[in-house]
Image (cartoon, rainbow, N blue to C red):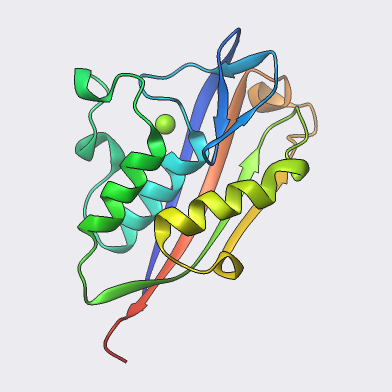
Amino acid sequence: MRIGHGWDLHRLEEGLPLVIGGVAIPFEKGCVAHSDGDVLIHAVIDALLGAAALGNIGKLFPDNDPRYRGADSRALLRQTVSLLPSRWRIANIDTTVVLQAPKLNPFTDAIRANLAVDLQIDIEAVSVKPKTHEKVDSVGRGEAVEAFAVVLLESAES
Ligand code: MG
């Protein structure tokens, strides 16, 4: 087995789209980013790359590369999955999104469904847990959104 951990944070500003796990969340603020700023998918990509020791998202998809301007992070996730050595398969993934507002609970099943499709695993193997930051620090003041992911790879040969 192999385990991988990923983390990401994006600043939030008024008038930008907020996309989390491929779902457009209605809100007055969104992520400042070179790509679509999908903080959760970026954490998942880093967890996958970490488990396979393939580097990190910035190395694979540089944020100064015009090809990734406004990029759909789901496409980057699918590309990452295609890079995983065939001797490993994804067993499960667990994630946490830290966002002061809005509440993400109404969207978690849609987010899980998107991740399950892109990771080619059962939705029961995909966990998404929203939390607030108790109104403290930058995330708690609504200035940023943060995401954590862990992924377990298991041998595809057993
Ligand atoms: Mg990012």
